[in-house]
Picture 1 (cartoon, rainbow, N blue to C red):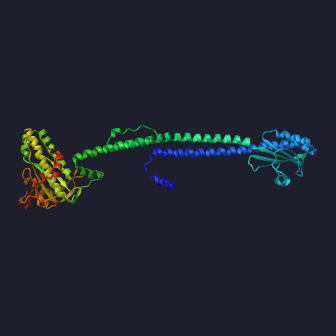
Picture 2 (cartoon, rainbow, N blue to C red):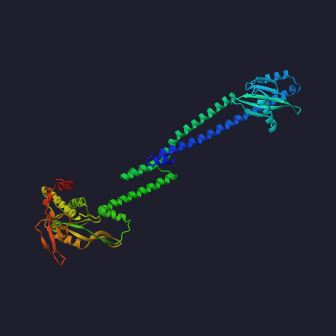
Picture 3 (cartoon, rainbow, N blue to C red):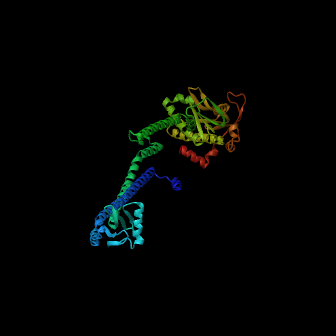
Length: 484
């Protein structure tokens, strides 16, 4: 049984079927034991009744035969034996004297001769001290009874009677068959009732499973659980509260991901709210992108139009950054800051940052083409990229903090963005030296440039955007972000 259980354990057998089989097996076992007990009781009762009937008949026969046997009245004994034989259950009667000689008989007799039977039976009766001895014959369909015949407390002979068991056995078999059929019927009814009973017990579990599947699909409105007052009802209530809590958590995560990048939002949530100030050193690339002439543009446009313009461009820029494994760190007025290789380490953070920057410039070109066709102002962007070591972590206060990156690498990326030409991507020497970047850097380097806030100059390179335009894979990425 254990091997069979282990064999079928990996298979996904429904709980209702398991319960049905278990309940059916239990009912079958109980009814089988009950049927066996009733049959055994019926057989014992049958044997007791048979012995009682045989002893009563042989006792009556012995009393009737005592006086003729004492008077040695053979004729009366023959008549008496013949009369007793008329009973349909009696198939043989015999009377013996004390020497074991047959005085009268009718029908079959169990023994043929004193040495083969009568003397042995008489010895057993005398030895055991019982007034009546009974035994079943070899054919198992006859039972014989031997009783001493006494007249006024004086033993004068023996009476032997054989009873046919077949009529009684037929009655017993009929009773046993009825019991067996009744037991089988009750087992069948129990098995048939086990399946709906098991499914009824499993119905609350089915509700929980359906609710869990609906919750996994995000269809919280489909989670409908019945109201119950029992223990199962309390389980359903607990699950309902848990589902409500999970749905609230999902709304929080969804809202948080709109203010933070998904990777950062996941990191913040995984800390279970136990965020501490500080950070760790990490290597990555930083991209800054801002609008050329934003101050003049702000003066020309209404506030609502300016907000719509920023939202339109920044939406596609965020998609471009995410498609290249970047993380939008923040939007600062007309500027967007995207980091690569942070918080998830990326060996190719440099080339991913450059690819994202070129995508952003080409998306801006396509948006400007549509704006120009509508007679709206076109917008130019400048992008700067730097690579190096930064400090990533929570900055601010214990009451209000922000997960971001800081350091000289970030500051230089911001400064070099301001030196880039409109519609171009400017790289620092550290960014240009990253794996896979050399073929996209123009040979005519900007050379050493001074940036605000630094004492010494830095090396800057321009990007050859034309090399990306002819790449089929790049064009497919561009079309997926902003189709022509």
